Each structure stands twice: as C-alpha cells, then as structure tokens.
Image (cartoon, rainbow, N blue to C red; front, side, top):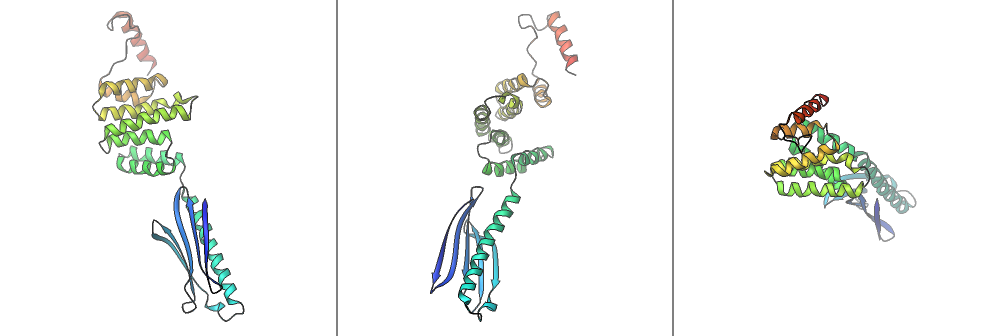
Length: 250
C-alpha cells in the first residue's frame, strides 16, 4: 500500500486530513473534515473514482467546553482518519482472491454452463494478475466462444502459451494440455479445424490420456496417426497395434 497525506490547518485548528492510498493497484482518496463547531461533527469519506464508497461521522460536542479543545479535536480527527485507513485496507485485504480462487470459481461456472459469468470472473482476476498465463489462456478461450471474437481469443491464447514458456521455463510442458485445449477451442470457434486438431494433438503429446482433448477430437472425427506411419493405415500390423493401444487406454 502506497500513500501520501496532507493536513489543512486554519487558525491553528486542523480542519482536514487528506490521504491517497493504493490497495492492490486500485487508487482511493480518504478525506477527514472538521465541519465546524456549529455542527460539532467530523466526517471521514473514502472515495473511489470520485464516488463516496465509505463514510463515517463522529460528534465532538462533548469536547467543546474542555480546556485545550482544539488540540483534542485535532487528535480525534487524526485518530479517526488513521482508523478509517487501517480498517479499509484490512477489509480490502480480506476480500482479495488468490489465483486459485479465480480458477476454482471459473471451473465451477463453466460446469454450470455460465460462460458469461466465468468471463467476468476472469476479467476481475486479470485486474489483479494481468500477466498470469493461466488466466489469460482461459480468458482468450472465452473471448472467442462467449463473445464470438475468435481472432482476439486466438491471439490471447497463443500469447498465453508464449508467456507460460517465459514464466515457467522448466516444466512448463506439464501445463501445455490445458493451454492447447483452450487454443484449440478458440480455433474451432474461428472455423480453423486444421489448426484446432494440431493444437489438440500438441496437447496430447504431454498428456496422452487427457479426456477433454480426446473428447474434442472425437467430436471432430479426427483419427490418430497410424502407429507405424511407413505402413498403410489399414495394414494388419497397424490395425493390430491400434487395437492393443485402444485396449490399454481404456
């Protein structure tokens, strides 16, 4: 959290405390004002994009008749201002989601068939983790399918794979199946069947038993390459090996 503060003083009495803070890359302005002895109120407002999102009021009429009331009122203002900041930051921190939370929510929404809400959840996640390749991959897939924008979706999915290779240079192939599944689905939305099959097959290289990718290929009617490509597909040896492979994959 970064912040900068200023204090406005009139006739020796603090009339305003003003602080700008940033919580998780979101900017807020906190302002505490002394509304004057007639109302005997202190008001603290927290603003986001010009709108008040939190407001707190307190009465200090009980301090007016006390000796040194100006100093006591100023101290009350400062304490209220600091308390408002600390409580707000703590509350925002409690509300923060982690990457795993976004993934879990997206998967649950997709299982329910709620692609639009899943896309909104990904948008929210990317405001906090804009460089995360996993969020970007799923986001690209849903941009293609839900928003019917395959060109942009494919671009994002391809970029997510490149980002994965940079962010996780060793062992990134472990995550490839999901990335190529998303890319393949984006290709399909763009009627690029050949590219989709290549993406799905690339995913199977790292996870031959991936049920989601196999399901997509079955829908496309895609067949595997023959076990021995130098022989005809219908050669008895290829048929026999294919039968054995089919049994072992069940």
